[in-house]
Length: 444
Ligand code: ZN
Image (tube, rainbow, N blue to C red; front, side, top):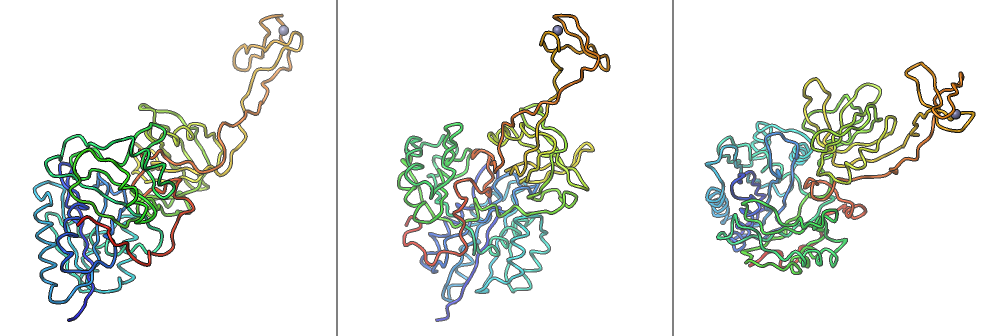
C-alpha cells in the first residue's frame, strides 16, 4: 500500500443566488472521510478583497489529505462530481475551478502565487503554468477563473498567523428563509468565549453579525483563535432551526494577510490592499451618504482616503483629522475617477502624529472687552458696543484642543473585511500551525 499526499483546491462554485464553496467542501469532508485521512482542517483562504470582478467574500478552499494510491481516481471523481452537482454553472460570472496537487510539500513558487493572489492581482495563465510545472491537474468551468483561487488556496499553507471558523449549515428546505438563531445566546456566547472568538457582535449597533444574509446555505459562522474555542462557541449558540452539518475550517481571516506595505504613495496601484503613510493634505469633508473624504500626501504624490458611512468609529475619527496630521492608512485602492487621484477605501487608520489645530479669532476690544467685528476683508475691525476702531487690531491665533488621540482606529465589525484583523486579535498572532487536530472537527 502506497500512501500519498494530495492537496485539493476549489474555488468559485457559488453565485449571488445560491451556493457556497465552503458548503461544497463540507459535503466533500463527509464523502471523502472513508477514503482519506485529513492532514489539516479544510483551509478557507480569503484572497484579495479588492479584485474588481469579485463581489462576494472571495474565499477559496483547500483539502489536504493522505490516501492510499488505489483510491486516487475515486477521490478525484468524488470531488469533480460534487462540484459539478453543487456549482451554479448556469450563472454568468460563476467560473469554478478545481486543482489537484500531489506534491507533499508545496513549492515556494506556489506559495508566492498565493501571496500575490491575496495582496494583488494574478493571472489565470500564471496559475496554469504553475500547475503544469509541478504536474498538478486543473479543471475549469465557464471562464475557468476559479483555477486561480483553487491554486492559491493550495499555496496558502497558513504556516504563520491563522484563525479558525466553525460553519453551521441549514437544511435545504430553509434556504432563502429568515435565519432562526437565538440572538441572546450569541451575545452570551461572545462574553463566554472572549477573547478567543471575534466578530460575533457589533457592539456599536448591538447587532449580531455571525449570521449572513442572503440565500446561501450558511446558518452561522463563529471565528476564533483555536479549533477548541470555536467548537465551544458553536455549542453555546442556540439555534431555532435544524443544523444540517458543521465543519471547522482553518483560515487566514482576521489576519490582515491582504495588506501590503507600500513605501511611496506614487507606487500605489489600483485594486491592491495597502498600508501607506502620509500627511493630511486636504481637510476631511462629508459627502452625500455621510462618507468622509480627505487627502494625504508625501513628497511626490497625493491620494484620497475614504471612510464610508458603515465604517462607524473610523469615520468619526477621520472627520476630526486636520491638515498636517500624520497618518498610516490601511485599505483597498480604488481606481482614479474624474481626474481625481486613486482612493484608498479605509479599513483602518493609525494616527501617528497630531498637528496643532489653530483657529483665528477676531481680537478683543481694548476699551470694553467685547469681541470686535470684522468690517470686511482688509477693512479692519470695529466694536459694535463702544464704536472704537483700533487701528492695529488683527486676528488672534488660538490653539484648539484636539478631539482625537494618536493610535489605531479600525472600521466597525459590521463593515470589516473577512481579512481585517480586529482589535481583539492584536497580540494573539500565531507563528506556527497547530501541532495536531482536535478529534471531532466536523459533524458525522
Ligand atoms: Zn468696545
